[in-house]
Length: 303
Image (cartoon, rainbow, N blue to C red):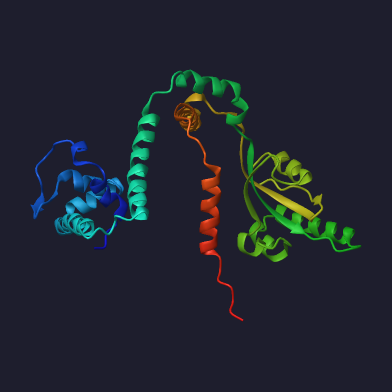
């Protein structure tokens, strides 16, 4: 019974008492004491995306097969119960774990759905307090040609860079010269294109020269860095600006909601533990660890 939907969720209907399931539409498939309801199908289909659910609902043959799988799941689970296949303590613990995980998910969803008091004001306050974090930096889009400097060949490297610049100023294609002369490893593929850069990304001398270029097409004089001499071509520049509150409100709200919900979950966990005041049995804990580790230890090799 292959399915895109996982077995644990298809078993959950068997783990939750029938009295907890609200009355609803009539059964879709029944017989032999087993019943598949619309809620059973919903419980399985909700694991997929809306697009996946719609695809299944449009495929009558596929939906028939999924309904059949649900029916067989109930029938075979009943057989397992009749055969007492899940009466052992480990199986009972696994069934409890599946049920508890699902109910935990439901409880956390309910907790997360509770409104967060003062969220609107907090979003605005966060923006006003951290405006610098929501500033788009000044950027330039540049290419470069790198002339490596061999030991003792400083003058020769500078002279080569100047000659290349003269050719560029006469209209020779920058990318073509970059592919031919640049010592940058990627230049043969990129034609020297570096893309958009902002302050703090490049070494200081390169950054200063790149941002000093004013008009698209401007080419810097040779710029010395520890890598060699660079010729920098400006393609575009974008001036920095402050993003408005409306531009970033959604991003701030989503981040704060996530943080506050996580904090609320932790506070609830802590309050619940304080209220219930469970007691550790450290001896039982240590005995469990010792016993399970002995069971997992590799067998001693025979002499």
